[in-house]
Length: 250
Image 1 (cartoon, one colour):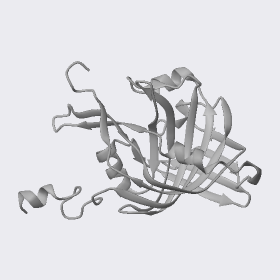
Image 2 (cartoon, one colour):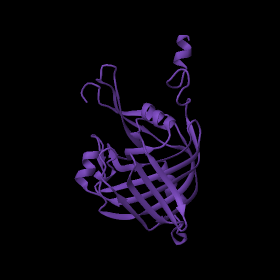
Image 3 (tube, helix red, strand yellow):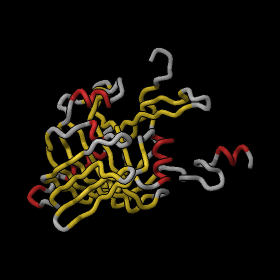
């Protein structure tokens, strides 16, 4: 294999790359998000500086069902997102992610720094209830529920569009071959080509269970604000470095 062929390969391993070149297109991506108040000290501990958590102490716990994802296939993920600011600009910091498919785990960690681990998330409609669960190592660590398409509370799709196109930030940490940090960055990106197909708000509940390897309960539920359910098509592009911890003076 030539040098040019090596440099043109999208990912490891050479014999069968884990994922193709991006950007990545998602069709009928379905979100279930529970907004809740949590402990402000716990939020501060989960957010890397120089990001600053929003002062209201709100956390978003989410499930995302992705039945048609270019290069990745069909999978589901679940995790924790914390509203923050960077130099006065609003952003969402992705703190934890759990999913059931190897290609997006590899791509998410290697390209954007998504904090992805393998687990068993599930999002489904059970009779009149939108239900999300997360199991890790055979144990349930999260359960969310929301009334299904609560029609009196249909959400303005423009608000959902604005939330989807908000700046997203991840902490990317990749060691060198000697174990020292090779990459230590805050990475940011914006979802593009977004089409919101439907959006609903409604009553919701969230139960988080402590687990050492899936510590979603480290951001405890103090009060549930409400649920958001929406469906959208969108594109995940490549990102940019927002902050480099290895640069002199950082």
